[in-house]
Amino acid sequence: MPVSVEIPQEKYRGAVREVTLGAGPDRGGTRTRTVTVGGERTLPFLLFEGEMPHRPVVAVEIAERAPTGWSDLLAKAWSDVWEDPAAWAAKAEQVGADLLVMQVQDIGDRKLTAADLAARCKAVLEASGLPLLVIGPGAAERDNELLVAVADATAGERLALGLCEEDNYRTIVAAALANNHLVIASSPIDVNLAKQLNILIRDMNLPLDRVLMDPTTGTLGYGLEYTYSVMERLRLAALQGDEMTQQPMICLAGYESWRQKEARVGEDVPAEWGDWERRAVLWEAVTATSLLHSGADVVVLRHPESVRLVQAMITELMGG
Image (cartoon, rainbow, N blue to C red):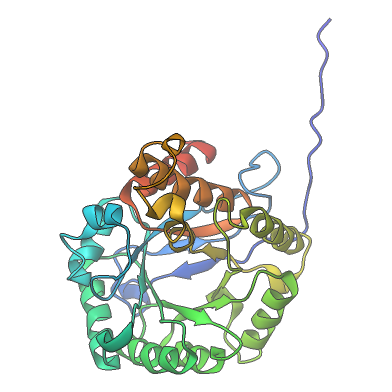
């Protein structure tokens, strides 16, 4: 005798806030493609319980010039274009990027002027129709100097500027407000710190539909499980109606993965670690897919093969 089984389903009263990156000509920008993330009313990929109106997206990290300290495997993939950020952006779009992230290196005596960086960002926008995110070098004074110049030079494009932290958010948020951009709020792995920074940014009158949230992440083997737990708590709080946790989350999975020896090193390692390139790509891809399952809406990657693998996984989990 057939027996019917009712599968229990969880219903939530809250939703993740929708955020649109990039602006086309109808909104004052030049993008040929805009990207909207967020809007979920369920935990990641549980489509039988609620809506995920926008698929998670993959961003490719580029730099304002040839980076230092990147793995030889990444050099093999990008060194033919990485002296020219515009050419790098165009190639990143070809390998499947939904978004571009320019991570400013700003190392030693290789520092660009703010005007030079702004010019390189404009060149990237001319070379690719994708939305652009620009992340400063991570020193508050220098972030402010560089990101204000970029914001002014690209007014109306709805770039995402970051990383906004407790020490520098005021200047970056003001620049975003004045030029119709977004910001990336970044806080150490902690639910309450993430909420507090979102409150501070909202209090400067930047609409929360112009804020992405970077909860700070670890990588496979280096704190990923703790990251997963914090992101899952943020997402559950958002779905339960906490407005200060309802920002889409962005994770710098490539940066975290490629600075670990399992991805970075190809010699003098145990034979059991296997082929270097396969190991490195999987380290990045597994980190990214884990973060997507914990609630990430945007993952930032470095290797083209990781982009392909993660895009395929997203497509499969979203039902094709």
